[in-house]
Image (tube, rainbow, N blue to C red; front, side, top):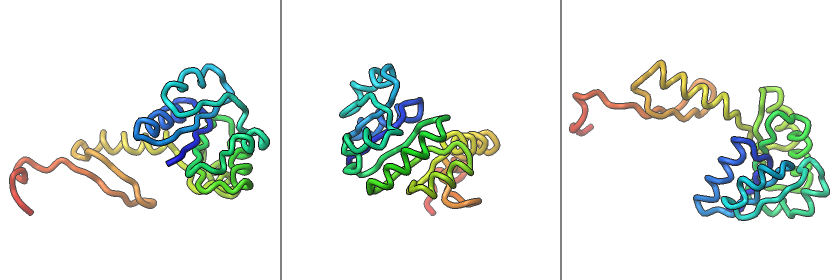
Length: 161
């Protein structure tokens, strides 16, 4: 698959590297030259530019990507404009990192297909692991519901269901 990752902070650079390691084509974009230099050997293409500029996005041919991940960190205005421009260009799937619930609502209203909250998601997972030591993994589904992988009690090991 073809992915573009816009914004190479901690979340963006790690998702770009992981997608590339899994055999995907990854275009990494950031306006910070140092961040581009840090990831250029771990992605297919790395481009130094301002992604909140519509003409820059069009010049990249970014609408041809299968998924575009917008991870512009604390720059709410830039993330909103970037999602808006991507939507106007007909981008298939836009996944945007949100900082707050209001930010997520705005991102969705301007065209984000999906919003994610990395810090909130990790906080929930950590709280569950700390409060329920038998929970090995947790996957939230909808508000209040999820799937848990739990460590079985010793007496269940080696027995069939």
